[in-house]
Image (tube, rainbow, N blue to C red):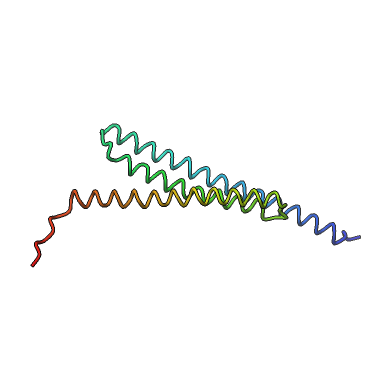
Length: 137
């Protein structure tokens, strides 16, 4: 006797939920790995700058770490979206909304700071190494 459709549906739903939970875990691991990699890279750059006594490199190090953190935030937000993708409750939707707003705001301000730092670094480099402007005719 074949299983009833309701039983098959329940089994399929259980498998899909399990697969999404594993996918969420994988995406969270990718985000955490990106943060760990960013910390390692920035730490290495910091040690090199301290060893060479180049304190002017600190802004570039902050920008490097900021790029990794911004990318990791995107992955973490994706994991949060996955967690509410299957039959979410209103509590989960509210929690996701709050997390999404907080992470989006963090990412916005982090990106804004990176742009400003990049502009100021470029402007400082242009002033230091730019040839003199030609005289007007």
